[in-house]
Length: 310
View (cartoon, rainbow, N blue to C red):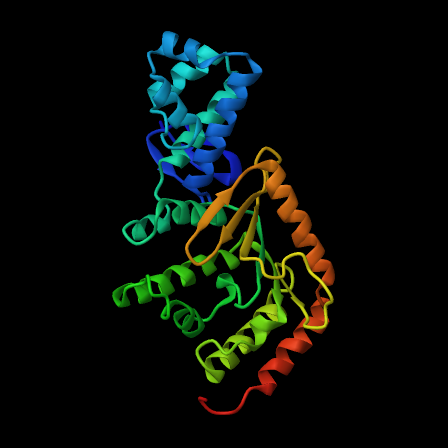
């Protein structure tokens, strides 16, 4: 008989056969496992020298575990559980997280194309409860049509022609999280400029705006789009890069931020920085039109575009 553990976010772990429910992310599981182990160690006052002495781990190995670069083997995790004096329930939770952490996320299919930090962002997004996004000149990637996404990607001088379709595919695969039984909750704040910048030409933008209108109407419960109009006198995010705030459904998992420019991108976990970004985002949302006014502006921008494929 297989021993089954019910793990966080509905993950079902069978010791003889791992079964991971939809939207359980190995990136999030690895992160949570590292957070829980570090918290347990610090609360019990166990220093790293004790771990190296009692378990034979090197400092570099334990540092890699606490910084999400390595996942403990089952045997080594059991040793840590015993050393830390972790109770049965928490021990089962840690073991189930370890099982989930060893799974393979869809983004791993693109490991030759995407660097580690981008893969982590995709993994965090996949396992998130919600995302708050800000864009100044573009429709957010989670809401883009394939043609619009391709028009955004093609001019990038650092992208080889043979990579373009793969990058479009990645963007479309991300959007799968907007559907299903537990859809990602998306709040998107964007500048009016994003509705008017003719990415790909008028016909591509028109199709994109019509797609955006459908999403707003059909997924009111999980997708909220708010536009900061040109008439807004000020906004703390004006001139800012892409901002992505990633929220989780567990109090133990703090909000993360993702910032992206032409040549730099990174996950931000520092509590003070994330708090400042969150406050600035909230201020931008306050400056935005309400959802009804946003919908009307999206429709108006589509109507303002010339007919045909100009």
